[in-house]
Image (tube, rainbow, N blue to C red; front, side, top):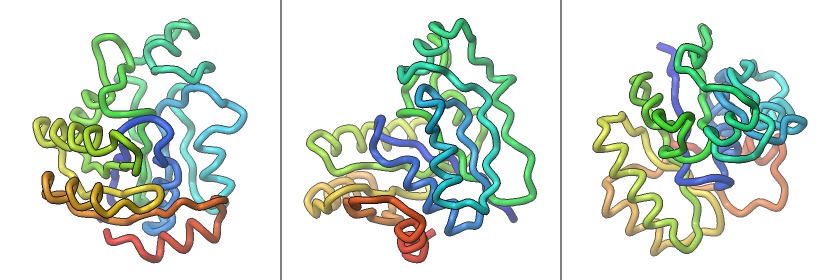
Length: 201
């Protein structure tokens, strides 16, 4: 059976797109980012295509011009993000879905990323990053995922390894580590391939 998996992060710029590329490669999946905010000439979809040129990349439902919280970017573009437009692409393949920002990012003032995740009923992989404060951000995200009864497949950690951070997050949450991604100077096809071979799904 083909899997559809949502990739969420504990914040912005913590490595969701690299993690999504690794998952896409490992599963030979399609890729979809429902909402892109800013960097329209070099979107996350463009990056996936560059790293994995044979991947089917489905077009975003919304392409917002400003790199801001989704509700604010949508307001500047005079757009209202509607659930009815966030239809998961039809595919006979596995599908990796990358959220924009963290789980509590508002798409509208009355509609958060996590509200859409709950509506889909799909399982989720959380991407964390080793920085000061990441324990708090990761455990809060995991607490929310549990409260909302979202199926959690595991965590992908990003950045220079920090065993004390790693241990306390897994101990306190009971979550499973799927992969640790090191601090890579360059992300390219070879790097994606290397980690795709190691991920524990």
